[in-house]
Amino acid sequence: MENTKSKEHIEKHFTGSDLIRDVVIGMSDGLTVPFALAAGLSGSVSATNVVVIAGIAEIAAGSIAMGLGGYLAARTDREHYASELERERREIVEVPEREKEEVAEILRSWGLREPDINSAVEAISENPDRWVDFMMKHELGLEEPEPKRARNSSLTIGLSYIVGGLIPLSPYMFIHQSRTALMTSVIATLIALFFFGYVKGRFTGSKPFKSAWQTTLVGGLAAGIAFFVAKIIS
Amino acid sequence: MENTKSKEHIEKHFTGSDLIRDVVIGMSDGLTVPFALAAGLSGSVSATNVVVIAGIAEIAAGSIAMGLGGYLAARTDREHYASELERERREIVEVPEREKEEVAEILRSWGLREPDINSAVEAISENPDRWVDFMMKHELGLEEPEPKRARNSSLTIGLSYIVGGLIPLSPYMFIHQSRTALMTSVIATLIALFFFGYVKGRFTGSKPFKSAWQTTLVGGLAAGIAFFVAKIIS
Figure 1 (tube, each protein chain N blue to C red):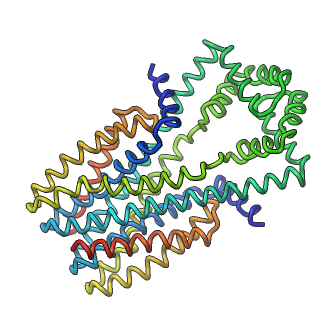
Figure 2: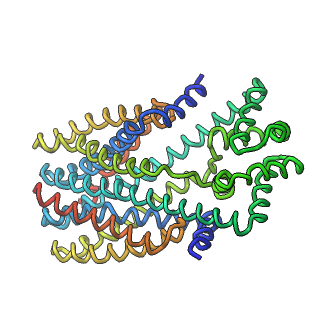
Figure 3: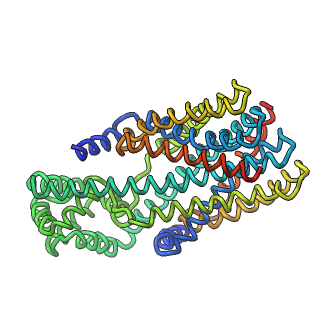
């Protein structure tokens, strides 16, 4: 039952709304560090406006590191794939026998018998696109990156980080009594972490309640430790 | 030439020191957000001790989110793999004909011809371990997670985040004049980002100088934007 469910989730993950998934990942990540930073600071700095300034600076920094960093990493992956693809295309023309032997080795490792291997190698290498695709996947272990998907995904996650980060921060904007602001932020954020952790679990193929607890635990622990560390050094 | 190099890098990536790679990733990530946060705050809050407290709170929060978050995610991946593995093992016993047809479909998609497919399916399904392994890789696209590797990796990255974060922060600990501390932090951190970005590129298979520039760019932009956003709202 559980297994059937998790398989459905994987399929949902690929066919379902990737946008919602990215938004939820970005928001649940965005909740964690700004929440912990604000909680940590509020234990040592009584002026809530300093907490707000630090929180906004963190959200700006974190969303750029995540969004732009992820965007550039996706571009690098794509370029790496393209350069390996070009190289395989050249090799099947320049050293076809060696490349055929590589296909044969892969098939051999799966337990195919020699006569079958020869004819399978001929079938695969008949079509250059299929041959190159086979080498990319099974020799190099590289899947073709989806051109726009990975970049858009990073940018969506980065933007959602901003929205997520505003949840723990907003109490400090409206409540000027530091202790009350902290308490409101802790309650609101733990509820939000649980909720987004649950939805994140549904969209990434893990068990929703487990994901909910883990997301809440990481956020809560990070905030608790940041609070005590800041108290000690201040 | 470039291609040969990048292939060597992939191999180096898998055979080389994974520990050094994790340390470098954690340190270059740790440099970014604490750097940007400190720079952002120093533009609006003149007391360097507030910058230090906020920076330490961020480092505590970020390293727990990365280390513990990564650790739990790795554990979830492993459990997910184990549950899918068990399911495939059951299916090859309970519905062997359907599972054989799935193997045949995969081989067909690679261009193998019908008579070869039948005998390849028989060869693969002769050994249950190989059969299950084949289904895991090619039907579900799941690679077996290395048991300790992923967890240790997250913890190493989390710890290195702390060390990386102390680089941009240390000038604020020793220099009490806010502007001088900021300048020292900017120069030291940009140099460190470039250096760790270069080493990160070598260990992750991308071009070292490109990785160096990108890491520096993301960190520099994050810090610049955090600085201006904090100035505007303060």
